[in-house]
Image 1: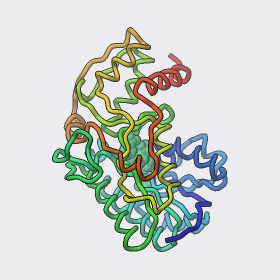
Image 2: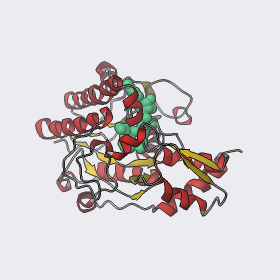
Image 3: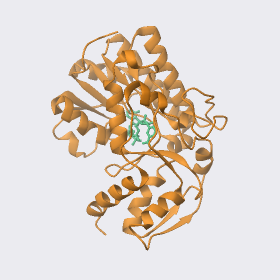
Length: 321
Ligand SMILES: NC(=O)c1ccc[n+]([C@@H]2O[C@H](COP(=O)([O-])OP(=O)(O)OC[C@H]3O[C@@H](n4cnc5c(N)ncnc54)[C@H](O)[C@@H]3O)[C@@H](O)[C@H]2O)c1
């Protein structure tokens, strides 16, 4: 196992919901010239101006290899993916990007002897046979979506690369991530972001999940903290590698609505569940993250009410009505 330190990072999917907020933090820690943005389709992003960037399709291993070679990369944060709802629309693409893409990243990490790789998983890795409350770290998975299937495969593959080839690959089972910089990319928990934009702009929101659908969620600052803390942890303390449960809060659309009402009293919510309800019904309501807490000191900072206050505060300044 390499004992070298991370010096030069490639982030795949760098302009997505999580990448767009992880990249600035990585730049603060490692220096802006040492974080290379892997972008799929070139677009105007502030972060592109002062950082090296390269166009990468993760389904093409040569492009990952070339980027690692060209920029002397030693660590990859592999965030490129097709998320749950988008994956059900095009399961073939989800397979290609999530499974072939992750395999390509791991192969490049093995061949080039990279120092570390981050490959996130998701609560979507669980399925309807999984215990839904306080879902254990190790349990029945059996996901029913292509996205979930690809995430379990990614976890297993990453663990295989750790045990077989000594690739130091780490990952978290992220809950639904709530943020205010970049809109989510087609997941089942997207309602918990959209609701804030609509509450501020139009004072009403039509939710695509039922009012009592409880799901695990996390505010972006905690997502970034969990990611960086896991990547910083001493390898000897890690009992798991690519598949740590992490939790912060669990709530339903109705819980979130009531919390927003405290700040926007004339806000109204309506419910019109669609195909995403079935996906949400197959996921856990809460997670047991005691292994993450014990092994690398995981502890979230934001509660539901703190997250809601911060989201409304930030977005009220950003959104011009
Ligand atoms: N956001 C969440 O709520 C959430 C929850 C659980 C897990 N995750 C996981 O976290 C990671 C990042 O998610 P996100 O929310 O930032 O997703 P996102 O959809 O916002 O961003 C994904 C990025 O991948 C890029 N991409 C798509 N196809 C590609 C390809 N072939 N090659 C290279 N790039 C490609 C897209 O352009 C996009 O920038 C993913 O692995 C996702 O499964 C996210």
